[in-house]
Length: 92
Ligand SMILES: [Zn+2]
View 1 (tube, protein in one colour):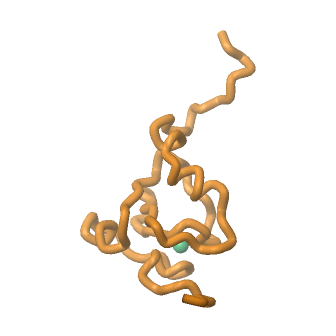
View 2 (view 1 turned 120 degrees about the vertical axis):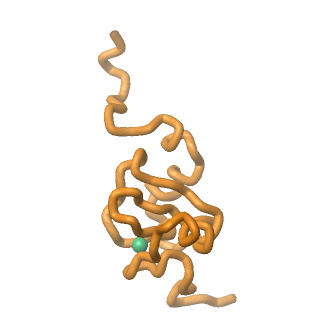
View 3 (view 1 turned 90 degrees about the vertical axis):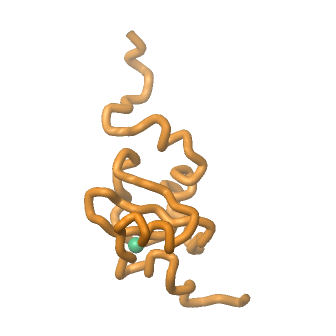
């Protein structure tokens, strides 16, 4: 028994190992638009850095583009735009 081992009851190890989850869980202040993550429990997709509550890893599906998430039946988050709308401040 590895009692000291981190409890992973609610966490899908495959998701946690995914680099995208690392980005999501780090909640970057600068929105990252390299991918979006959809939340299966709410049916919306967000981009990393969204101010919404962090979902459980096992409820997350990652997509390369907002279009892919939409095609999978998710809709854009109203708070972050789901990656469709560009970040408010862009120097590009
Ligand atoms: Zn969002």
